[in-house]
Image 1 (cartoon, helix red, strand yellow):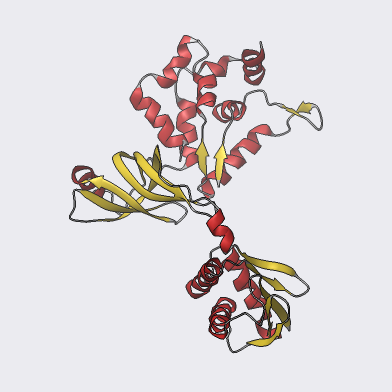
Image 2 (cartoon, rainbow over the protein chains, first blue to last red):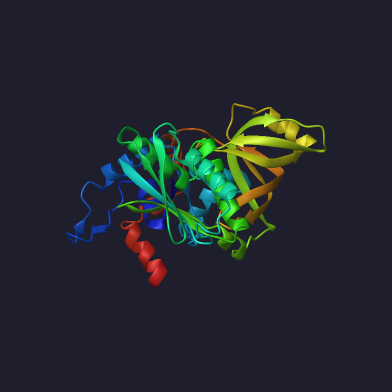
Length: 88
Length: 242
């Protein structure tokens, strides 16, 4: 199986305590969002799922002009590390 | 008991050479398997329709075998029989199908239509393949490298120059590596893209840490200013749409 993460989910994955999105059926903040994210990560791990981070997703997360965010992609070695570890 | 009809559109019983009929029947028997429990029943008039019945005890297994052949996963002799029938139909400028009486078509043989479909070839693109090297060896300058993907598929057709192959050999059977290079593909008439050759120019060893550990490391990277945003999803939406 192959899974592509979008920017919204990547943000929640990096910060599971972030304010969750609204559940479209209840129009209220998604119930137990943190537990759902951790459960999904565990499932993806167990299933050895290949995960893809599309370039536009990384662009949205990394290149929004705030200087400290650039710490996430300081140079080639670290950029490769992100690729290696998330694109499995 | 279940019954199967094998239909060929190019002949009638009056024009069908007996030797050709025998070859079709032989391959059909190999495709269905369970030769002692599958019986020829009759030849129907009109186009060529061979009817055979399968004893009840073998019916589920025959059905399963047909399903597997349809997915190109069946036993080797069944897949070969399918290929033989299809190529013979192609030569005879015919098409055919196998149907379970009361259950509809179970396998179609494109036959002559294969000729009408294009076989695209020679598409070359830069890309990467992940897997564990399981065989490296050869006496030419470009050394063949066999890799096994994490889903268990074996990829052949990859080559690396001796210097790179020597480095890859250090990871034989042990590490998952990502090889980069240029792959050449062709598309079969059935629409499947097959790798003809992949020239590896470089590779890297992948981190095989569990995803949960990787996520923890990513969360620990300093300077993630998103953590200071009260509602990051709303912020993302604002950045996208203004």
